[in-house]
Image 1 (cartoon, one colour):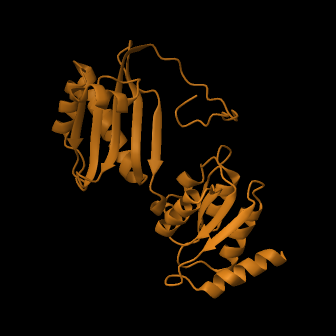
Image 2 (tube, rainbow, N blue to C red):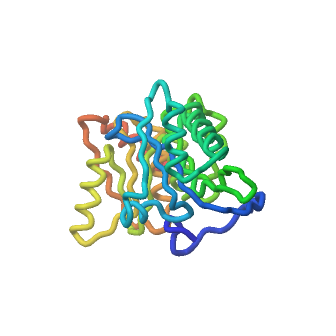
Length: 257
């Protein structure tokens, strides 16, 4: 179980069997996009195998951050220096630097937004090994990273969110009983606040956007009405960015089908 796991748990669908490694030291290494740095950044620490947010809160001095040139990538001096800061010695310094550079090349090649290695291990037989990783990819790059996005496993996802994504609808399930169809994230948040302030509870956040078609609205309504918890539906559309007759036609089509 992890912090991201819901209280009811998640059914295990697959089990990964990996090589057993005798770990001498557990470290942390990540490549992330950082707005303040206006580009990619290496984040590393000798305190791997634990929650890096906790390390940042309790001992920020133990975290090393390196800004990486977005075009040229990291220099060898940067990766060697970082390897030394992580406590690698002898031949392991070059090995660790090689790993940092390979991970960065992967980050760029596959349009990643984050590659987090925790732990990055130093084994007792003198290897630098990636033992566990969490990867995030830029949704805007889906058109050129088709093989990567085809690997998505939706078994653990909310089926309503999966259905909405097929029709380019933004959907987030909540635990209330009033369905919300809106256009625009700001209006969606305001609508849910109004419902909450008046004693109701929103069942979800469903944003059809500013350019929805009749078919998209119809599919959105099918998702709303397919939720057994929903007892009422509030449609709140800003006509300045969306034709209201398109919304109306979509609702009529959904009612007919």
